[in-house]
Image (tube, rainbow, N blue to C red):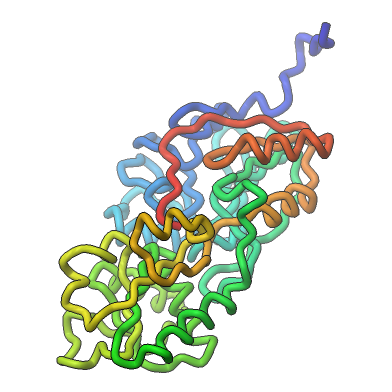
Length: 342
């Protein structure tokens, strides 16, 4: 039989409770990324599967709060916490926001209570991104990690390789345009910034759904260069150009006005050929804002927690990796977390 804890001792991490709607911090009566409105929420980043309106109090980085105000109308009851700053919660719980490298404002949350350190990564990546503060390795006792691409087949190529494919396709098709589907928050801005880093200085044309988000990035001093709305394009201006749109717009009526577009999509899922075929994507660009298999396993090794909890993704494969490497781990069953269009 397993040894019993003394009656005056709690099980490790018993103050943090995985519930279907999110992670509950019991002594603080607070939630991490809850899927419904609560009295007190700590939010890792602004994507809709992690952030929502209606909370009594929303604690997040200033950039995440700006994104939530823009996308979800969250303007009241907000508590900004800068990277590296510690916020005291009820019940003697301390919360420190640490860069996650996922999108603008994204954070890991370090919780400290009862002598234990817990890091909730939210969504994260380790690869460089000119539009996001780099991931910071944070030692802890318990690591709670995403597992979106937690299969060995998912090894993302260098982004420079994918951007070169995009620019080469444009150069070889001067009488057409390249229409790039990319998630409107994070992915689109990263692709634009990487195009600029590769030396592309021409105007980049935007679907209307991307204009305000790109403007917010520029408010946070991320230079995206010359961006123009497709709606204002003079006749012929889009020929030979690059147009950015949400993935949902790749095949709708809006795209039919473009000059013989070559359909591209920037997503980690473009590694799976069938996904590209299903979306009628001519130019798959394997660009992800989530950690791939090697980044996930490397992060667990770098952080070196005594225990790992795995959530929203391919949990079983990463759980098995932990078992093979003699690391204590468990899979969580949280709802409301989706693959997005990464």
